[in-house]
Image 1 (tube, rainbow, N blue to C red):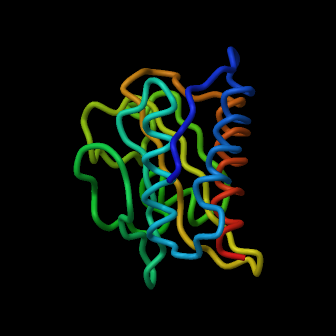
Image 2: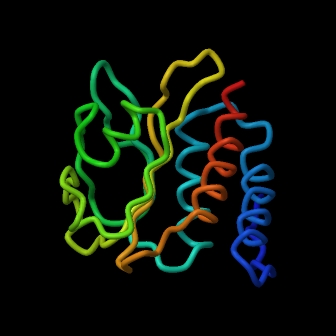
Length: 162
């Protein structure tokens, strides 16, 4: 049985490094996408402070459909190019939004969200699996260190598909 260890790092890069190590251990040897996505979302949600939602949207046809997550109920379907998730999916570029109210294309699934980071999940063959979406009730919660850390965490998740 996996048990998440308390974080000992005192800086964000260190926290993300520890979290990536825990994610590797949590998903090691498990090939099931849904099982890994559910455990990954729970691990991140409980390890990082200042989050009110984190989870996956998987590509289904021409839209993103909610997958395993932690937090309040979420939007079920998001069109490619619409909202922060749809933009991340369409551009295949991580989106860091300091103030979602100032983002002209933001979709409010939870009115408490104030900032957001979305990482596209791109397979080795270039195909899009979906996106990893993280929301916070705090303005400016996510920065460049979070972008690098979240992208590294998502790389660990994507390794389970190899």
